[in-house]
Image (cartoon, rainbow, N blue to C red; front, top):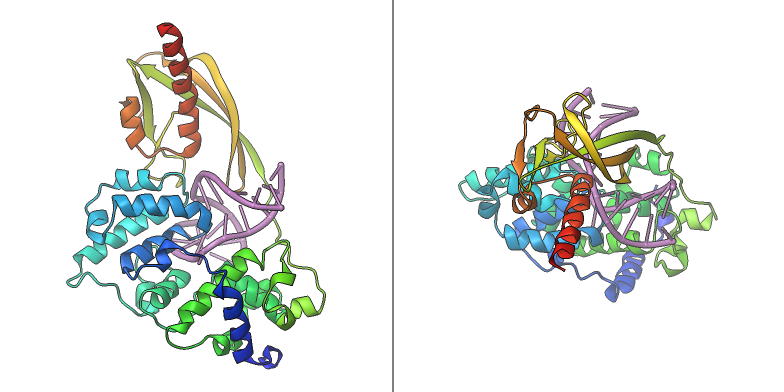
Length: 339
DNA sequence: AAAACGGGGGC
DNA sequence: GCCCCAGTTTT
């Protein structure tokens, strides 16, 4: 199965030559701190490097160590993650910090099989930690590696995941070079071997690529049907505070605070503050934001929160956006009053 | 095996 | 406006 590789030595050489002046200078590549690397791996799950960077910097400033994270309140942790999505990652990282902080040496296990037993660590992250933290010779299979090696080998991406990947192990150098190699392939996948329009003329492996040699077109992924739903959010103000309640729409936004849905029985609708749409997984949600009042006492679990408090609470981005509609409105009112 | 989980950036 | 992302967990 490895005949098409030609010369692994030569392939590695071409890759390094390409990478020499194109390596991304990422903060988690400049550190040896296991915690810092683990934070980056959690943030990078299903999230682009460019999106992660500012969150990573802020996070490391706020929670610089396992202990600082372990002792932080859940709410503050989620607030720091707000906007990155997949919030279970933050909850799991928090759990992991508490686990590590409770270990005698405050050390992570080095074995991927052991790492996988810990919260938020699956097959990819276990191997990424083993590779990037403990310098073991591992292959963290992420979408970059699947795409690059899938194309090189000319196998269908989906069957490639199931099929033997042993030839990639032949390519993977030993020792410290394994890290450089994987980093290079990830950079290649991110900048050259793009999902839709790969820039093959820039690729150091162009002449090794079976997909390219066959002149085949590249994969297209089947997409899920989009569902459109409506949502009416209520902005209920009292003495400068707004009503928020614990999110409880299934499992989404667990432990977050939400603006309440407008309820015809308990609320009076006042002004329409605005409309916008947001997408979440396969839903397209059309939001109408209403200023509203309780008819009597507030219904259901919740609390009043003034603007400084709202800043500290974890809120889903669309709800934060809805809130911004009134706050902007009030700022305008205030400035016009002053005049 | 498939669905759920978020949000933003790039084209 | 659609596609995709340094995946994991639940169903």
